Image (cartoon, rainbow over all chains, first blue to last red; front, side, top):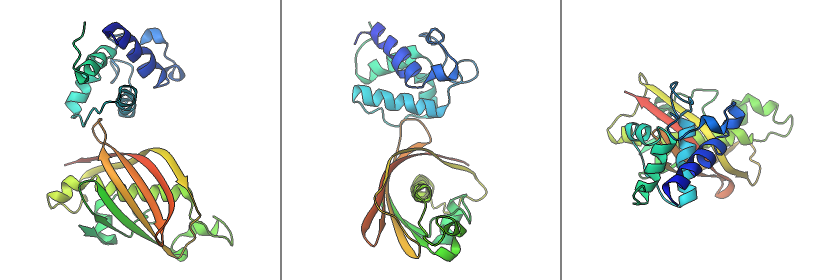
Length: 96
Length: 153
């Protein structure tokens, strides 16, 4: 999967659909590549949403993320772009 | 590493009448087993569930398993010789129940045995527990739980 395709999958499937953001009153347009996902500066997702994202990545790609520290999790799951890069890093694929 | 009910009460914030663990034994880095001595006279909910036909509520089996598994999440503290979390801010919440199947009813005045394999999930403070509930060696229920467990020192 190329980076652009991966980013779209993260935005649409992993974040918007899996986390049921439509039910929370968001539209897909509000989930852009650089949208901050957690905290009041962004979509205000919480740690259970973060867990759902991690489990979604593991299930879809068949990879194990391992245990992340709070700092690393905050950095890697900051936005759809950082999540897409994180998935590529897990697969050792350079972003192109 | 074994803990009787007094030891369990020092680790869990849960107290009577919502403590459903009589004793636990931490078996390894990930495995724990526990018991609940289920006496009808000690649990008033049997009067209503059901009148004349007491049955252990399924949701309380899930709760009891989460309490047993929750103690395993404190293993790093136990390894440091810290056997009480009293005085610390600790949070242990059941946040997800997956594929919990109750195969047979459990009636009071028995001992319920719990087994759980507890592993950390990628996101900090979350753990997955794969559990089994047994009475007299017979499997009564199985299921997976997700726990949020955090202790602030």
